[in-house]
Amino acid sequence: MSLKGREQRPIVASVNETMTMLKIGREKIYQLLNSGELESYREGGARKILWRSIEAYVERRLKQEAERRGRAA
Image 1: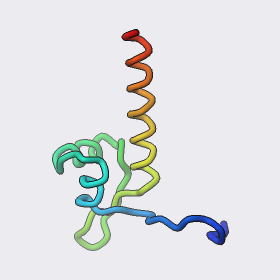
Image 2 (image 1 turned 180 degrees about the vertical axis):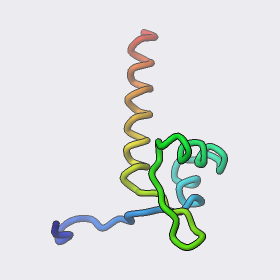
Image 3 (image 1 turned 90 degrees about the vertical axis):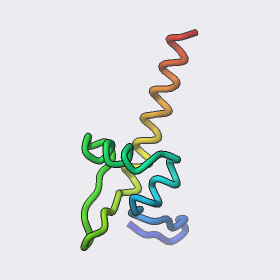
Image 4 (image 1 turned 135 degrees about the vertical axis):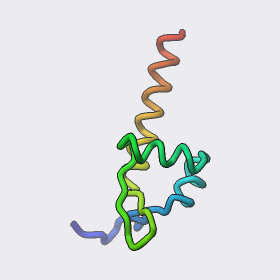
C-alpha cells in the first residue's frame, strides 16, 4: 500500500496519548485494554495502543449512542 497522497498519521499511541485523545483516565484505558476493546503490544516497557483500535472504539461508541438515542425517542 502506498502512502503517497495520503495523510500520514501515527500507527500507535502511548497510554498517555490515548488518555488525552479520548479524555478518559488511565484506569478506563486499562479496562478497555483488558477487555480487548483496545488492541496493544509492549515495546520495551511501554504499552503501544493501535490507532485503528482507538478509531474502532470511537466508532462503536458513536453507534451505541445513536442506537440509545433512537430507542429513547
